[in-house]
Amino acid sequence: MDVEHEIIPHCNGEQVALDFTDQLPSGFRFNPTDSELIVDYLKAKFESREIPKQCRLHEVNIYKYKPGELTERYRSHENEWYFLTSRDPKDRRGINQRYRTIIGKRGLWRITRRHKPVYDATRQIVGHKGTLAFIGNAHKTMWLMHEYTTNAPQ
Image 1 (tube, one colour):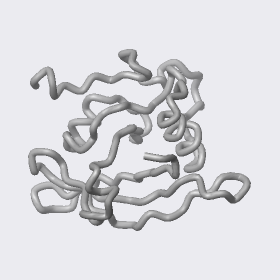
Image 2 (tube, rainbow, N blue to C red; image 1 turned 180 degrees about the horizontal axis):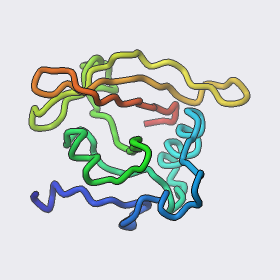
Image 3 (cartoon, one colour; image 1 turned 45 degrees about the vertical axis):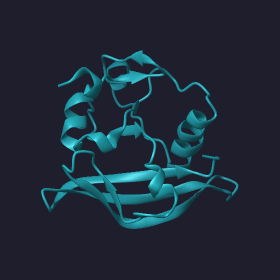
Image 4 (cartoon, helix red, strand yellow; image 1 turned 45 degrees about the horizontal axis):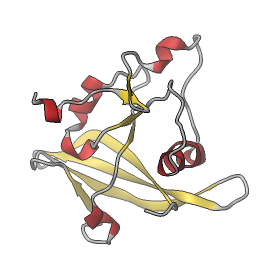
């Protein structure tokens, strides 16, 4: 793998060697609500607030890799992975709303469930959640992605 394309696990700029669940007592899980994911992690990233070092959020352009490449690189005991990534600017303008293409034409993410509002405890909309399925070699795969977007300025 080329150095410029290598995926290095890190959190807040520091390399992470272990899955954070290795450091927790038995029975503890990273299980944030949709609202917590948006407010405590996604918005925090936009506002340059620090995300805890024990996070399970990995900053990587997921659209450069097939899902299997990412899951091989980032360990998870729960078969759930959390990534922070930017959307392609053309997606934000409303063009190509149904698909997010993987670089190198190795597959694409197809929107299977339109984005719906996510509310906080005060019933304010804090962001949106949608579902995408990975299509590889013209066939639907088992990979699903829940995509969260924030109302924060982009």
